[in-house]
Amino acid sequence: MMESKAKVNDLEVVRRKLTILGAKRTGTFRQIDIYFKVPEGRLKLREAEDNNKAELIYYERENTAGPKKSDVFILKVQETEVLKNLLENLLETSAIVEKVREIYQYQGTQIHLDKVKKLGNFVEFERKTPSDAQAIKKNQQILEMLMENLGINPENLQKLSYSDLIHMQQVES
Image: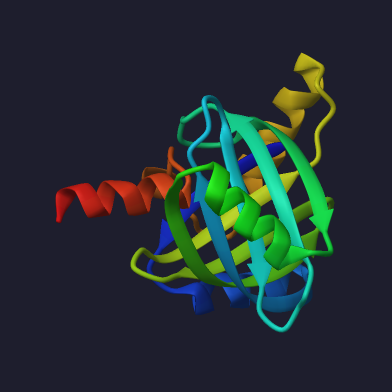
């Protein structure tokens, strides 16, 4: 998977541009991601408001700005509270990220408009990508063009995950 994330001042501007492009809005969700300390990669339990199901998500990716390759494993969970209690007893919580996520689909790219508590507004792009170098390069270019069409300033691209940004904010306080 290729992904990229940028901080933005106004989600409404991006929302209007997505509408003009013809992107399809698939929904808005209030999510809480509980990140756990693990030896490598990132592990989070994602709970969505008004939903008894959750996702356990493990991913590895580089901390670089701009479109980057990400290896993701997602396990859909029925017994959310049981798993949450187990994880909290076994692992140390590293961060809790609360956000409202509006999801759009556009030509094979999933676009998230995120209002993240304590961090602000972000636009995140995810695109399934084969692992060969040529496909990665092509999909990287597609994401860069989409960001340009939405007026995303390359200087606002983020290297870190929301959990890392919250952790940095806590250290600086």
